[in-house]
Length: 104
Image (cartoon, rainbow, N blue to C red; front, side, top):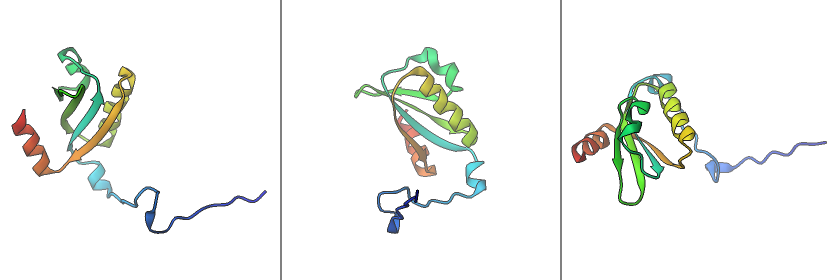
């Protein structure tokens, strides 16, 4: 039996080729994790002191500094364990991090 593979040109419909250097994965970065539903303050210790913002659209934004990719994956596992739908994960640029900190 022959296997057929489709190669897409120019990244159409596939994941983009974003090569990240090892140094970028191991540096602390600020993230915004948006989930559907509201979390109250009792969950703060489960998320290592990250900030919670309950939005009027029924979502919660969990934001703060994450030491590396392994820690980010740990946070995402905790969100999964809550059973609340994950809506987005955004790595903030330094300018975005300053703006979001001043809004809180």
